Length: 355
Image 1 (tube, one colour):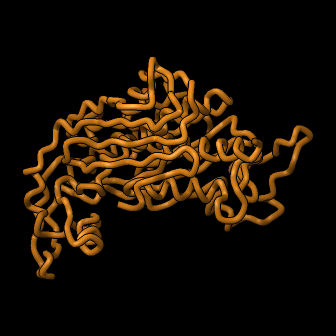
Image 2 (cartoon, one colour; image 1 turned 90 degrees about the vertical axis):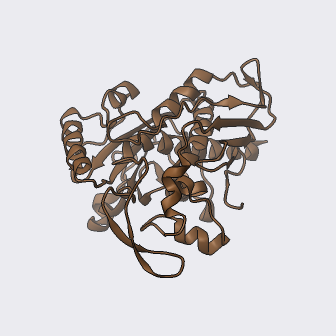
Image 3 (cartoon, one colour; image 1 turned 45 degrees about the vertical axis):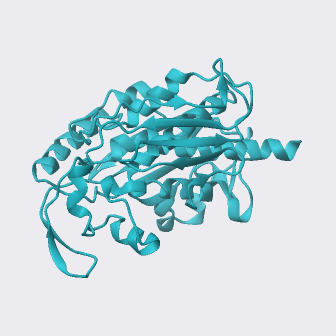
């Protein structure tokens, strides 16, 4: 299946379906001799797995990663790193009712049109279950980037109309002490209350994740078609349920004048403001990279809906299965992982240029 490989130098190819025996991946281009903290990789997976909060899917998956190759005595070999995560709590019978219908705003219809045959169990390959593979690869990439001083801060800054006012670099403990991964306590409390209202109504909610990356050296990114922010945008828009991406000032830039928006240089080559979001001309300028990612509400709502079957007949759909009220808190480690993959890939491309 094409479209399952990400990256040019540091590459991830993922495989597997939501209710298959396992999901997994192959990582190529990882330098040899890197000592990996396997506990940190598992910690990243634990942040993504279902069943963490009242508003997440109650599916119980251990999401314990098993490495099959490419690592010996805790160090990378420079050969392909293969890994799997077993699917232990799939309930395929919960999805028998959608075998002959197309759920609104899901990939059922589009997959059927493209392939002529689909796996309806949990969405098959289109399921967000696949993102666990990205988290494994991203956690490895993040450990490599730590060695050059790159640090990540990803957190929920909006759910529904409840939004943080200040964007900043927050430490991981400030983010994770909130069940919705929002570091601003008062906003987090309003988010939780809102999600409880939505859950009781059998509905779902969307939101946004902010990512701040510090320590990125100037000079990463390629001109024209492989601009750093373009690759970040592609990475984020490849995540399930993502509907929007903005970097730096984003859509606010459309309301500003050039004299307001320009980032004036200082003597140390930093800038007085950072409306560019750390990237100019598609290449990092050494300032923190900042972007936001918007997620739509979960498509499966616990309310009756009308839809169509493969014959084009209007039918009633009574929802079943285990689903999130809001995916945004669980998506924080996914956004962080994809950002790490992009930054590391750009860094390794730069290293190749200097050879």
